[in-house]
Image (tube, rainbow, N blue to C red; front, side, top):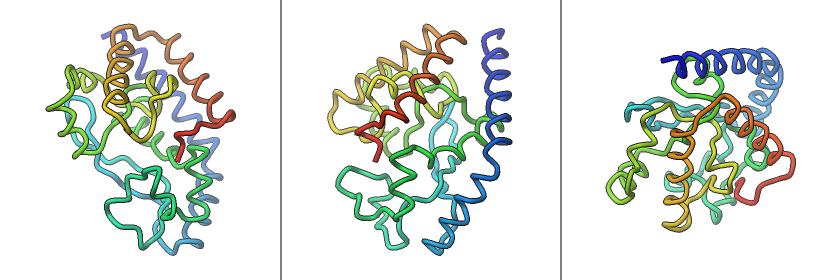
Length: 198
């Protein structure tokens, strides 16, 4: 219980500060998306969270209007569907920033296992050992797996197996210091650039 209180307090304070600091950039980015795509600036996606509860995860819209449904979960070979502003938002992970509203609302944490789409979740729940363990805590905007190279598209079975190993490692060894380390590495990776940020 103490762990949950500490983590929730940290999440609430950090997400509140970031939302206040980023409110003007949020508005500017939203206006650019509206002008360039003629679409809503926010894309809403159903994801699986803690205790397998479905929640709505927002992202800044990065895809063009004519994007096929199958390409909305962006893969390496579907870059052609990105809008001009969307390409920049993806490469810098700025498209993920609206998820801090989820953290503020309590559906997500700043750090935790990244939430999967429903179809992906059902697939791996049946085929990957201990996959369910990652649902014991709230999903995160970033996580231990992501800072160790297992972010974005799952290209091989080894990708998801190693992602789950890191998720379980995080759950078993959580500390506020570990969260701070993961956040620091996430920021560092953003500035350095990540090849799977597409």
